[in-house]
Image (cartoon, rainbow, N blue to C red; front, top):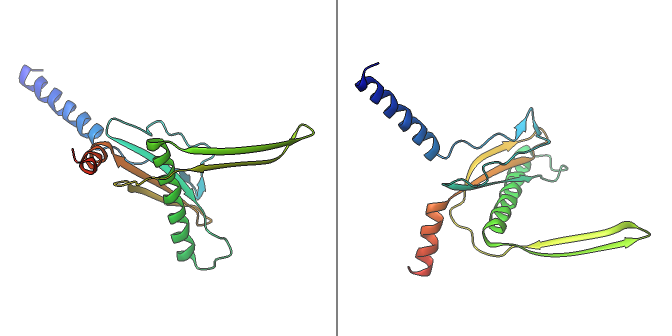
Length: 155
């Protein structure tokens, strides 16, 4: 291979890997054959370019209109994903109480409170299950988020 051909090959290879890395990649499917996977790995919750979270939503199964069920489950999934992302970015206040009687937990309540504004998170994937539940994947571009924070603070 000549120097020029080798250099061209190397340049194209580096460019391809750069584009693949910068594009952020596709969100990985969490639903297989209409069912949510029993194990959901999230190795890329945070990369150098973005932060990504999933939310699983379900609608009341007594609703007969499929469009309404899907819309409600999508909204629920998105809100859960947004709550997870906001808790990751800003922290979460947790209140918990556990009642134990005769060495058996009889009542356990855990409440998390997240309160803040989340801007710029985009839905990158919606997957419906066979029972019209929805897994929603949202992604936040870190650079855009930092730019928004700077703009809000007036810097």
